[in-house]
Figure 1: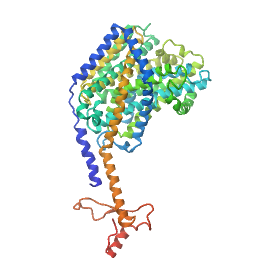
Figure 2: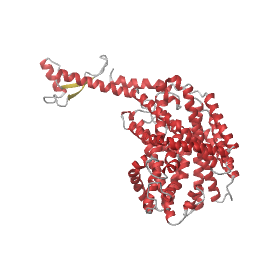
Figure 3: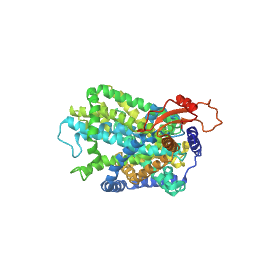
Figure 4: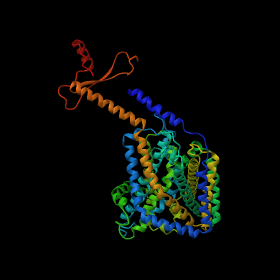
Length: 602
């Protein structure tokens, strides 16, 4: 088969699959029903016996961290190697969609939506608190009594380790597998459908696949609800800081959560291309404005110095950070890892069904190389700038005696930093608006993902189902806050449940890597490349056998009836190490062949 026909075959092989995706929105009653019942059971458990929920989930978490922490430590760098390896391999040029298809969203909007769905609300929460926590209480195995500069470098490198390359590589693995399976192979947009090349379509759509999708629904529900609950606590603290409320109680929390549920439902009903894209772009404008203000008014030179210093410290400390386990890092490291690194890896894995599926949904038309570069490198750079600005400012204030770390709760620490600079009212209001919009966009994206999982992978789930999941998310977060007395205990219980779901989901991610590799080996573009290589090898071998390495490869239409003006495209070639000079130009060779009565071209 000729090269042109092969390339046309790639489009024909992919087009029926991609265009043949089911557009119907049929709710899978088994997946939807079991997920809702299990969620309600945990809510009732938390309402009736909050202490029991927290104690049981905490005990399970401790056991998981102790006995299975090594698996998370291996899984995180494995995702980095796998995703970057695909990007720089021959598969990097494969499009997540039909051949030649253009990206559905502009790059700026694409990055903005990734942040709004992935880490927007949590970055606001931890942007100040985590670097400050590692500065005041350095990790085990690091010089706790070292100079302030040394502790600052340790704090920044540890924070970047938790928030940049590794988590986004974890998201990229799941997002890439789903995007390829859905947009390239034309399967349902579910995690279970990715396993089709391993277990067959029947099992992927049957009981095996439904178990995976139910796990994904529960992980999304618990993980997002815990994040929204934390966000509600931070927003309520901000309401108190700006003087809108004298104290933060359960009624304030309920009012904040209920008030944010209304715009969440409205945006959920407006679709990805209109509502969520606009909201995400607004989030990026507000976040950039707040970061620029802190950068300009805060220790500007220190922040600029932190950028290269933090990267250098992160790269230098990476081997030690990545290999740190409770058996090798000394006293107290087991408890620290359970609270920080290993807990983070498990938490990010529990978020992969939600973030991975949403990133896949907005990445149609990009190549694998573009996808991996955009999902890993761009957010990592933005996170570096964010933590350098907010974390560096908080540490600078702490060193000057402002006492930021002495604030009663971590929810207040961002507002404590803003209180040290001019325009306090305006910046706190901006921070509150940004928290609210990140709250709404995160809940909207999670509701959309759960709607997709509930409706057999519909690219655009019905608005009613999305709205129902949005209301359930808000209700779950509000109920857990209320039964926890306005504190974080019940929310921590939800977060722990989400992390426990990550235990089986680690195995799911390994299976997804194996499935996508098998798919990529059989991709039409991969097969086309293999055929091209074999064709060239066969031509070179034949030329060497017949002409001793001195020959020309002729390219012409395979159909003799195709008009081509009588001019064949030829390239003189000589194998490395062959004897004699390089063949004469093609025109000279043809004239010589005419005189000698021989055709010396091959």
